[in-house]
Length: 444
Ligand code: MN
Image 1 (cartoon, rainbow, N blue to C red):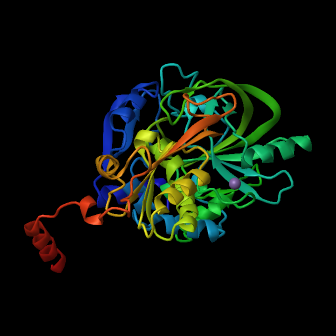
Image 2: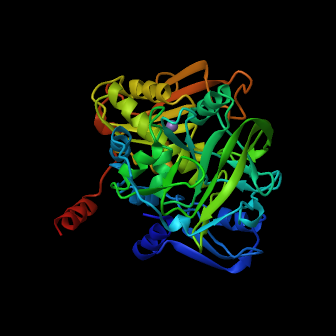
Image 3: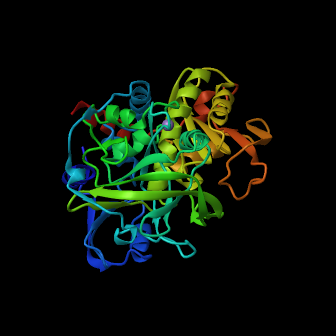
């Protein structure tokens, strides 16, 4: 199940693929087109100035597309991803695959890597899955990182203190560089699996394989002891240096604002494997794809946690206006007064980056900002239904928080119907004719 197979399936099923036939520069021009179509169709850039490669962009740019990619819908994707995280399945190891059609010395400047924003220091790989082998050889990890092109065989990689960070530290203690294979151009289920947040030492590619129904195959890289999806578009083999660092940033993050410059590790690329007609996968920083790939796996973990606090959770959304990171809407089937506040506390407790949470009843469509606002307008009172928590741990990404100590204020808005008042006052009036029409439609 490859990137190109997914694009063709989407073209056939939803018609949501837009071909860009005119010649476009990878410097800003392609990014501007991505911005214009953000959240819309998959874009296929047919002709990139100075390159013979094509590029695909916005592949994971809509919720519906991501749901389709993992064989789920808006009601079931929580369970689907949770199940895959609990049941990672090793992919079949095969001798060779399409990604091995070409094997060549690295020349990153020859790849159609995009430059996105005005103040970016250079070209950034934004959809690269970094697959690493632990220094003791015992496990493989996969995670997505932004990487700045420093030259024909060098990248600066942003690594926040999570799994890959720990693996590099372990390798450095043994005086070793960390072996990696950077995978570019995969089926979107692989991106979701890789972002799904299983425990340390669980290979995220196995989670992705479960999401793909066990149909993933992997090949062993020739130069590093790492298995990668056999049908990827590109694989860059190399190592993350134990000691060499370089300036990384400024880079536009989820918020659409610039992240600061930091010293970050250098990746040295030794070899590039690719398909003969490889399609480069681009992803716009701060675009809807970036937000959804970060947000959807978090929603799954929040859903699991909130379910432990209140019996019936209908849905959890990290909303696009809140960068799919800072704002959540949770819908519950309320069974007692106080359920709204408990759900809000569970939401805040399960996601440290969250700042504001709105809890609504199950009759409110959490994908509609207007309906959520209606619930706040008609079911919420600021003196009794608002909870303020001061000085809690927040997100480094929020420019309004205290970014030195990463402290932030958190708000919970309980916009569920208060049970002390007659429920009928809060329910939307129905028009009988429309109701009969709906029943007729249901019978058909
Ligand atoms: Mn991991």
